Every structure is written in structure tokens, then in C-alpha cells.
Length: 267
Image (cartoon, rainbow, N blue to C red):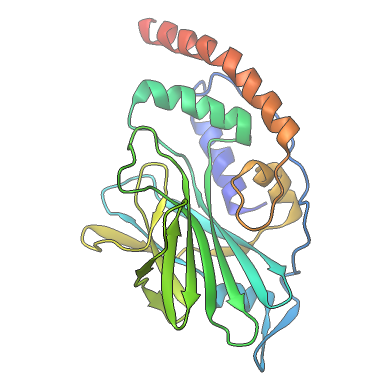
């Protein structure tokens, strides 16, 4: 059993009565092919196992040193395309805590219903050129400068390598030149908000660096933690019908959850 599943079970056992709804939902299998972790791949003239390749480009995560909700681990999967390898890294936190306690209660129940657990799993997609070994593109979610801390926008950011420099496009804005920090081939990110959206340009003061353990995302974990419902980047695996049904259910259930929460507080 993976570490994130173990952590989630420990968390569920320790928080008896902490959740008002405990659905048992089964996720869908992966809808696209990925490389086996023991397979040999070529970058230029050098051979790597898939696991070695994922370790070579694994992102480095920073977070505010005062935050207690720390990342647990990172999983990966690699998609083989004609000119590049797409390495999808998934950073796993035990929870995602909204600043408002009441909103957090409802939001947590929604995540349990929608994702199957309160775990927060955020994706960073790194594209590696098969010939040069350069990081050609990085896709992640960020918060625009004018975004709201209480209602984040989850805006896609695309970092592209163009003529030995990097330009970043956030949402539908025009690309701007940026200077991301790389440690050899490993790009550095800051988890900059309570819902763990990422930034690549930031002050490193009062932050803590996490060099997380890296594990292959196997089929069992993919289905158990419902990865198909998570936000996707270049490779689509979203099941719209199931998502729409869950959202409709939650629309009717959320007032009931708030009512139960108020009763508990009065009791």
C-alpha cells in the first residue's frame, strides 16, 4: 500500500466523527498509456530507466515554514510522445484547509465526495525533449496576482523554453519572459497558497524546502485516489458524466452538511 493511502487511513482513524459524509467511491482506471518504471528510455545518447528519468527532473517544493500542513510525497507517471517525454508529478498533501472554518467544513466534505478523500494532490507536468534533454515545457496551476485568497481561481500556467530562455503564459495573458530556478534539471516551486497553487518567482525567506520521496503512480492508487477527477494538463482523462452527477448531488447535500455542523457546535 502506498504512503499516501496509509497516511489517509491513519488520518481517517484519528478523526473519528470528523467527517459528516464518508462515501466509498471507486475511481476509473487510467485512460492513457504510461511507461513502466523499469523500462529503459533514451535522452540523446544516454540511457535511463523511467524511474531514473523521473528522479532527474523531479521538482523541488518550497512552502512557508509556518504552515503545519506539509507535503507528504510525490508520485509520477511518464507519457511517451514522438519528440518528448511528459513527466506528470503529483504532489500529495494530507489536507487542503480553507481559511474560513465553516467554508472549510463544507469544502472538505465536497472533496471527500468528489475526490474520494480529503487528500490534496496537485500536478506539475514537465516535458523533456528527447534529443537535448532540456525541459521544453512545464504546466502547473497558479494564482494570478489579483486573485482572491478565499476563492482561488486555479489558473493554468505554461512555462515554455524558447531560444534558450523561458516565457510563461498565465491563463489567456500574453507570455512574459521569466527566470525560473533550476537545480541542475530540477525546477523549484513555492506552494504559495492554502490550496497549494504554485509559483516559480518568489522570495525564499521564511520558507522550507521539501525534497519529497518519489514513487511510481500505479494503477491501484490511480483508481483508489480518483486521479481521473483531478485537473489535467496535456493528457485528458476526465469523465464528465460522473463529475456532473457528483456536483449535482453535492448541490443538494451541502445545506444538509452545514445544518449538521451547526447542530454539532450547539451540542
